[in-house]
Length: 125
Image 1: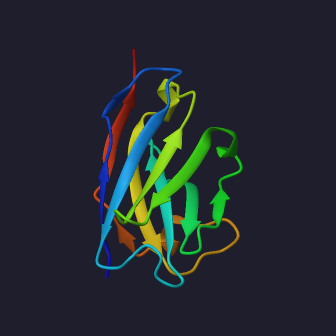
Image 2: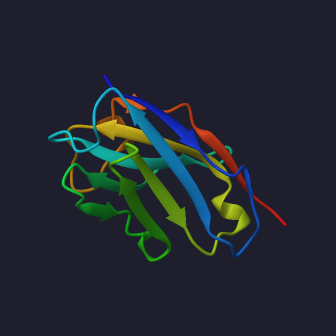
């Protein structure tokens, strides 16, 4: 079982780029069949899947966020990171990283069995 820990800035100004990082322990992120994902939960709303990068570095985006989202990984640090550009207050949320070993064409939060504790990111001037 992998363990995941998010780290992020806490507060981001509107129009800037939000960056959060997930540090993984327990298994290398290149382990066969793993997918590494970002999922967020705005206040009072449900979970929203954003993006996934798999063990072979293939990337799949939520269509609604694709134009503003990027994901990268650092295998030397066993980390993967999310960047969300041109943020607005509607991007305020708890951002979770999660890991799973199987998912559909549009991943669901239930596809991921391992989660970090989440990091609150607030977009405000």
